[in-house]
Image 1 (tube, one colour):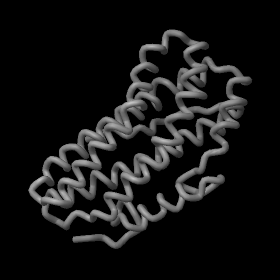
Image 2 (image 1 turned 30 degrees about the vertical axis):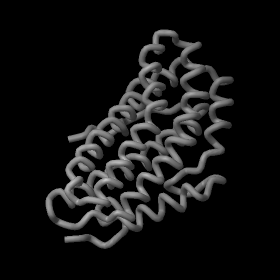
Image 3 (image 1 turned 90 degrees about the vertical axis):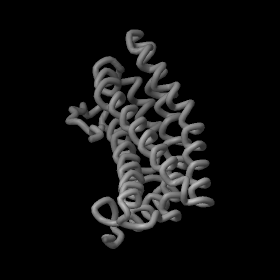
Image 4 (image 1 turned 120 degrees about the horizontal axis):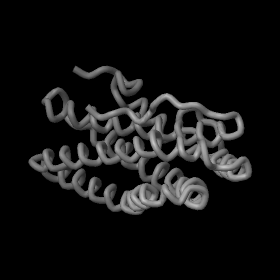
Length: 207
């Protein structure tokens, strides 16, 4: 059972904006990852044929939003300042930043596994195993951020730090409620949710 990255948290008013955006983006990514895992499990158990359109849409979302917008802002606006305010976090931040750097390669390998499966159904188990590893890695990463890094940031970053951070993350699109300027991410997320069957999405349940 994968541990959810969304633990109870306390937010001061002066830093609520950026932290809320970050956690909402984690929540959106978690929904897509759960849906990806669910879709593969349903196929593995013989309950339904894999929905290739849905699977490709999920990978497109991960590339378009977390990889290209969310992670770079974490590195630039949270991690960089946190290193200065609390040098003891450096080792943990090194791990997280390295995972951010490796993520495009991980996603590329997952796409390759999906393409191999699309060409030959006997490659399904390799794709399914890759999905399980990929999902576990993402949740481990988000757990570290949610349970360790963000609580430290709440304690040690200064109001002037959060002013810059809030402004940076305020420009993000919230994939769940559609507030912001990056409508393509909201539209892609909405498409995924409508394709996914209940309980992970709004699509019809599949037997």
